Length: 381
Image 1 (cartoon, rainbow, N blue to C red):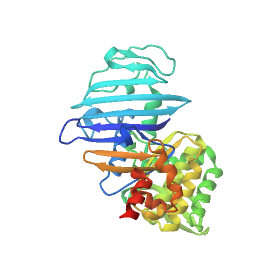
Image 2 (cartoon, helix red, strand yellow; image 1 turned 45 degrees about the horizontal axis):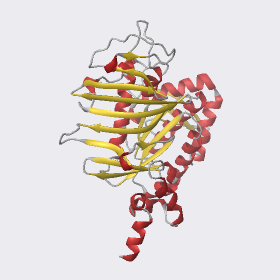
Image 3 (tube, helix red, strand yellow; image 1 turned 60 degrees about the horizontal axis):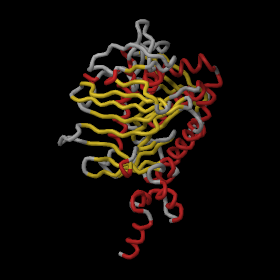
Image 4 (tube, rainbow, N blue to C red; image 1 turned 30 degrees about the horizontal axis):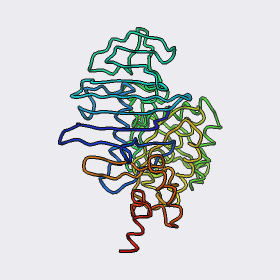
């Protein structure tokens, strides 16, 4: 399942109000690959936090009592199995006000009406849920999830912070299982377990694919990738030139982040899994050539897959390397972060190719908002 569109508001009609909306009060639209760009404080990282928040709520990993913001409203459009899912959630002071689900335009859930239709069998079910919990995460007495695709999507989300050193330093006690306490999406236990499962399920083909990606990125010295026992637990390691072992803790930050990303992407791609990946500060810790290589590899792996990829950057070189069709330009206007994308601003995105300018100029000249009118104003000014 893929998140195709989003509208969002927190603290409506309050001094703290902030919202995400598309150009012309439309939705912010997303594809499989999404680059979020904008000036400082436009809302790039905050948008990733919103996606992270709703994923946590849908998966059941966080409850309303643990939500970062007490009052929020989400309007989401998902796509999966050739169906469109519209999900609406509104809660105030951590109490559910409204929760509605439409599948291809038909109501499958409406809490106000007491309507609940199981997705798998399209039959009415009785759900008893108080107003401090989401119905979307409800289960029957046997633990079967009524709205399973949404819970799975929430659980599939993975976070990457290219400037974060914490994951690299963390070792796990047992790489063959994921303990309940370790199921945080940022935990390295997920990474080590994924490497273990990839080798167990796909064998040498899995490792060869990851090595190929690392070689393409310039780490040609890597001859093997494995799990290593060290003082304090287990971590990933690489063998260089068939002789030297480099532990997880001794890798450069750039190598570790790229390797971690390729492990997850390769496993998801080979398993045909639906995964949502968030990457803040894309390319941090990598030089320009490796950043470009990383983007090319990721794009090739995600194309025509069930994987969705969100990334942010302030790097003009990365912006110039990623086609505009993958861009979402965020403009901050008072309490709104307004998204301009290929769906809600088609003409501006299509016209820019006639300017002969670099992609970075699409942002700096405000072409995404004013089009040729802005360039004419500059020339006449």
